[in-house]
Image 1 (cartoon, one colour):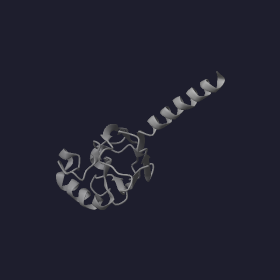
Image 2 (spheres, helix red, strand yellow):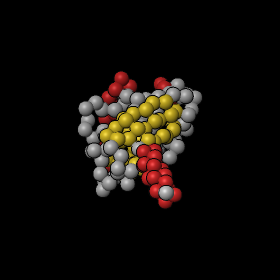
Image 3 (cartoon, one colour):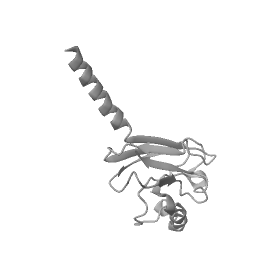
Image 4 (cartoon, one colour):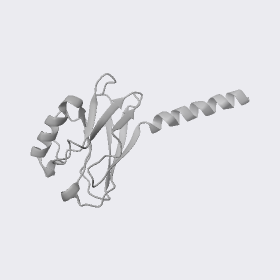
Length: 147
């Protein structure tokens, strides 16, 4: 009886542990820094829920931040296209299939949450996340891995 209870408990814990890896949180500050330079998601996740929090105080028009996911090779091109797309498009090129996920732009004290499918991601491919607010992508980026 004890052995069965122990087995059920460990199975329940492993489900909770996997579920939590499908939800990510990251913050950005007024010094143009993300709180981490690497995010990992378990390949068993069908979707990812990501929350971006702006821990700074500066307003959105001065120091706005977003979170954009793309293949590593596409960061620069997407960032440049995002600047051309402008604030009305969240500094993200609309309809560009290279953009795998993107949040809204938030100012100091704000936060935003998105959910995106992992179906287009592969554990064998390199991905980057970055902030596409003008001038930020060169210093605000990190690795995103499906493990």
